[in-house]
Structures are given as C-alpha cells and as structure tokens.
Length: 280
Ligand SMILES: C[S@@+](CC[C@H](N)C(=O)[O-])C[C@H]1O[C@@H](n2cnc3c(N)ncnc32)[C@H](O)[C@@H]1O
Image (cartoon, rainbow, N blue to C red; front, side, top):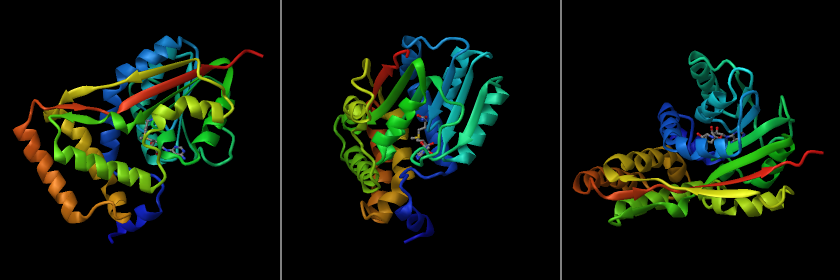
C-alpha cells in the first residue's frame, strides 16, 4: 500500500487534496454555474446581503454570490482545506471581490460559525461527504438570519448514465461510488434532502429543484476520468479496485472516447432544497 493509500484509509474525504482535484472542482463548478445561479436569483439574493458558503472548496459559488451582493454585501467561505481556501480568496480578491472572506473550520466539530447570522446559508456537495450530515444541516440552519434562506444542492449519483451504455463508464461509476461509500459518503444524498431537512428540525423545504447536464463523451469523459483519478487512492486503500483494473479503465476511457465521440454522457443529478426562516 502506497503512502497516499495508507493516508486515505484514515481520511473520511474520498477526493483528496491534490492540485489535479482542485482543478476538477473548478471545472465541476463551471458545469453547475447556471444551475446554482438560477436558484440564487430565485431566492432573491440582492445587493447588501450576507452569505455563507459552507464547504466552499475553490470558491466559485462565492464568486456567484459576490456578483449578486455587490461591494456592500459580504461572503464568507468555510472549508477544512485551508490551502484551497487561500487560493479561492486570492482569486476572488484579484478579480475585485474584496467583500469575500475565508475561514478554515471543520463543520462537523461543535465550534460556532463566525459572523453568523447570514441572509443566505448555502452548501453544495458538502453533505454528500459527511456522515454527520443531519447535525451539520442543523448547525447551518442555526446560522440563518430571520427572514433569510438555507439553500443546499447535492448529488444523487444514480443520475449518471451513458448512451450507448459502455462497460468502462459503468465500471468507473462502480469504483467511484464504492470509494465514496467506503468512507461513509451518501451518494444519493440529493434525493434525501427533504427528509434530512425534517430530521434536522428545519421542517419540509419550501422548494426543491433538480438540475442535470448532458454532453458528448468527447468532453464529458473528463468528469468521469478526473473523478476516477481523484478517488483512486481511496478505492485502492479500501479494496474497491486494483491497480491493474484501474489501469484498464483509464486506457478504455481513452479508447471509448475515440470510438464514441458522440456518445452522450449524463452527469449526476444536482438536487436542491431550500427553506426560508420565519421572522421572529
Ligand atoms: C466536493 S467539494 C465541493 C466544493 C464546493 N462547494 C463546490 O460545489 O464547488 C467539498 C468541499 O467540502 C469540504 N469539506 C469536506 N468536509 C468538510 C468539513 N467537515 N467541514 C468543512 N468543509 C468540509 C472539502 O474540503 C471540499 O472543499
């Protein structure tokens, strides 16, 4: 077992913290920009508002928020990954979004969320990774100001499909799903959001949304291949696949992308749920 695999055996976050994974997160965020922006607008995110992006990663949703709240608003990103947070903040400030801040914090620990309450508390692709998703959701709700919103978007990986059906994509999806499952992630958490809101004491969401994306394998392969590479040390550490089987999958993705460039790949569903907090 390599050092990376040994580390991953104890790491509860399956995707790792490599520069390649950071690039993948940025590309993924570009793919969902319209789906997230649409909900921010639907909830009426306006100039002067305060926002929290919980598990902000590369900070691309913070950018969408900053554009809407303007210089009189404020946007706080929280993440356990302080290197990624520092890069996100540098990029946001370099493009003029000085109203953005970053705080390094593990949201599963009991510490209070700084600068709360917020007009909007948002989390995308965070609860997916956290076995403590109900208590984290309750903590996020506590950070919502009266009259403000909690908005969560998360994946249901059952949405992934390929036309024509390709064994390579099926196997890559099995490994990705298996690696996430091995560290306690919930790969269907998007579909469970309404139930989680109730379990967290928030009550039924006021609204839900389902977003999807479809693209040719020639470009869509990047999502599968990069996600596969990111989770691979976790998958190997937990016996979900072997080095030899992984090498076959990676070689086959290349071959399939050449053979079926117009094959259509459907991304996982991105499911949203939101709730407005009553004014006291
Ligand atoms: C899949 S990324 C999503 C990033 C971003 N929300 C997006 O949609 O582009 C999940 C992020 O959650 C962060 N994260 C994981 N566990 C966390 C925790 N316990 N507390 C805070 N952040 C966490 C990771 O470091 C990572 O940046």
